[in-house]
Image (cartoon, rainbow, N blue to C red; front, side, top):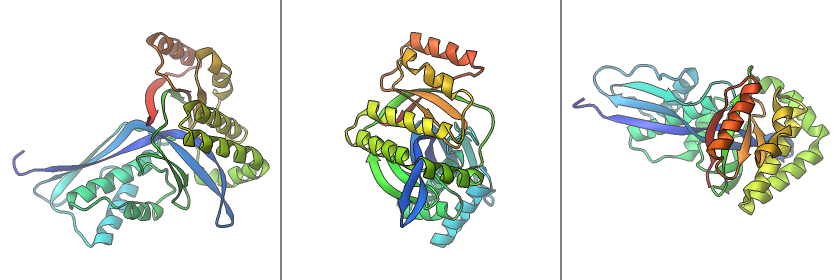
Length: 288
């Protein structure tokens, strides 16, 4: 409509993680992630117009994020209205909450014609929740509770994926003590897994990254098991998948393919997951 202008913010989500495990930081053992970006997104829009701005449409956390942003810059919203849309399922390991917050912040930067400031984004996130590294447009080794990027790993790795979402939900905060005990028991295996993963990224070797993601998923199965994981793992070679990934504190399980699956293979994968009682989805993960 005449006189209206829409500003938008977009943020991708994740398909769980390629790695989740222990990392010593500043003398303490922390939970480190290598999130698995997916080509699915959260959108937040603000359309200027008459009347006071209504509430941010994506919930309490995004409303708080907007408030912290405005407080940081000493600004007030102009007249207008919010709207939002998301491809990301809530509570399964797709980083929907963090993506909503980041999309809101990106929209706010555009509303006020401010340069995107990663420091402000991390500061706002750290005041609200543990987070995935969806505010970056590359892979990273990230401490979710400390909001610290330990190592950036670029955009050379990408996968085609097929995945399912199991029933249930995991409260990450509630299971943190359980995870840390498990990490202490299997610290050598996690250290080896992370070392191999980082080498795979450095060499831009998707097969090596997929092997490490499978190892990380297997270690996770010992403490937060997925009902279908063992069956999915057992059929990996049959389908020619390079690896298996999971949402370590979520409900996703799937295959990693360095090459795009053929239409015939997609048919076969769909039938396989249907026999497990699930409708599968296909998505592009990572970059590459």
